[in-house]
Length: 349
Ligand code: DON
Image (cartoon, rainbow, N blue to C red):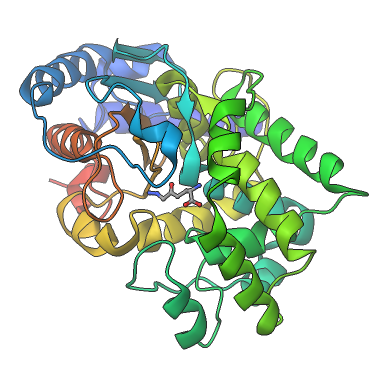
């Protein structure tokens, strides 16, 4: 009660100071900085029209299933910390979450072990190399790099406890579903397609084993990791997962505390540093928001305290990041003044 009151007073003060427009204030006392709906709507529509006909990039094809996904699909979803939902385009199509899953397995690992153990066992350093690089495993002192590249992600998955693989997998899927606020399911065809071709990830798991940086059976861990990458999400579900991070671990739709608030800065800083792999530096320079991409064509970006934007468009750039998703998020983040590194993003004139 006391906390709600404090937020109420803070919101009123921000409105009085002209930092937050009254429209925001009228919506909720929960987040004094969530954006105004009309503004977000017009910016998202502009971005959609501006980039919809961009055909650059190419679907991922090293996972055969992904090569045949319709590359023209394009959807944008925003979920704010006060649970406003804005969607445009192909937001009902369920695509594979792929590497974006790594963020939520990291959150679950911290839930189970605490951040210090996860940091000691996986680390959080940029690799400066492609997401599936075996050279990074060999060269880096931590070997696993960070939880958002394949090697570090497989190591992170291996930390999840359970009597057997089935129990670990169920725990991961349930956790993702809580973050999405809806029951998520595996896209079996994606899983089979990747499981039949993931020799590179198996090699990474063996390398991790060589350096004692994997904490369960290596091939079992790769299999669970492959399943987590094959979870289906639509753009709205993905935006809600992102909004859970933006809302200090509380799912804004269900009100459930899914992730401990003290873990959020560890997750968001890791996303800033490695969320777009070897494209992360340029992304931080231009956009200034923690984000995570997946080769299924999704990217989710987080505006802490405000909300999350998820974009789905399958064609990828060289680093494995959706071209249109990057364009849209950069455009929207600039217009909504979301760049975390700009003091104006928190109201300073
Ligand atoms: O392990 C893999 O290669 C895929 N399941 C995930 C890679 C991925 O999404 C990289 N993203 N941009």
